[in-house]
Image (cartoon, rainbow, N blue to C red; front, side, top):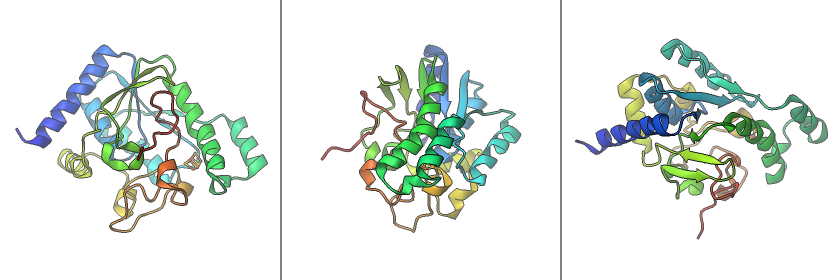
Length: 236
Ligand code: SF4
């Protein structure tokens, strides 16, 4: 058995275990490549794990287009969570539409309104949530485990692709004919909101295009909480 085959089987087994032992469970999809691998595995196996996405109001049209691709391919409608309109309106009124460029604090406040608060609603009442994070993705994810305890949200958190490499992800997508965001072919290995994501140059870190005006250690949106900490920062 090749390492890749074992990796896929272990990941499928993890998803089966989540569905069997942690119901109700949800999968937070950003509609990027890693998340399409998990979407494919969940929907092919017809696992009772609800797939949702945070529709921040600032996503690329290509990312939103993935919702239709998933519906066409699997007949599945991804559940969407949107920010509270009154909070968005207040932020824009008080600070401006793109105030996240001004400081880390303003960026985190925008992420809090558009992502963190809707995520809290999406996770409420569930026993586990699943993400497509991988250990190799960035300086903030080097200690990622397949199973973690999300104390802040009060449920188990699974990162079934923690051990996967970027090559593994693309091998799965190509070999299983999984639909993927066309931005990945235009220099975007990591995709977030449109104003906070840029294409990267060959040789750059794969998350270099996310919040590129900030230090690598601050580049999380506060979604991935471990031991009560909002940001996972690599310790020296
Ligand atoms: S990624 Fe950018 S636009 Fe999206 S919620 Fe965070 S700061 Fe706002």
